[in-house]
Amino acid sequence: MIRNILKETTPIMFGYVPMGMTFGLLFQDLGYPWYFATLMGLFIFAGAAQFMAIGLLSTGAGLTEVFISTFMLNSRHIFYGLSILDKYGKWGLRKLYLIFGLTDETYSLVTTIKIPNKVNEQDYYFFITMFNQAYWVLGCTLGVLIGGVVEFNTQGMDFALTALFIVLVIEQWKNIRDILPFAIATLSSIFVLYFFKDQMLIGSILLSLSILLIIRAIKNKSYG
Image 1 (cartoon, rainbow, N blue to C red):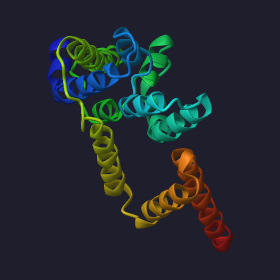
Image 2 (tube, rainbow, N blue to C red):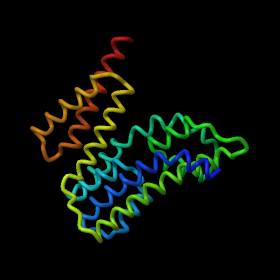
Image 3 (cartoon, rainbow, N blue to C red):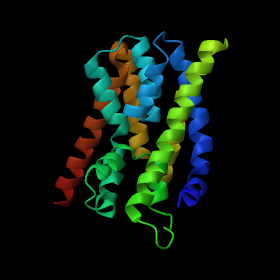
């Protein structure tokens, strides 16, 4: 079973380890103890949110801004996570870990792979999730340790977060093929950046969400 899981998760390893190392290198510049990066990988395990946390920590963001930003960023997990609750079954604490460890890549695997014969489904999903998290934690730890020993010029590496968001936007576009949400998000960001620069992130998210909810309400009323 382990051999099959290694085979299935190897492509994810090649993505998680380098990305985790990038996070570790950037995190090291904040001046926190190295093991904080490892703990974030263990207890947060959210690539985009961890990168975003670097920017929030460096600017001294408040807990409210951190909470709203992280929740909105990872809210997509709610929607596709609901689709596999029944798939995971009544597995007690293991199910809680599977929910915690759900990422875009893990979701892709558990919804597409064919489980080998005579292999326990619960064990297979559990170890896939655990292996994927292990790759990420390894990358985070290696990055922060290497950054503490070898001097790196991390200038420009923070663009990894921007690049990650661009990839997420592209994936969203491929899924919905609707220009309206993207146009609303862009215009909202420009508006908030101009008038409320200090609260740009939260302001643009809330404004975009409000506009989309209003449009949805108008459509529902028209159809009703």
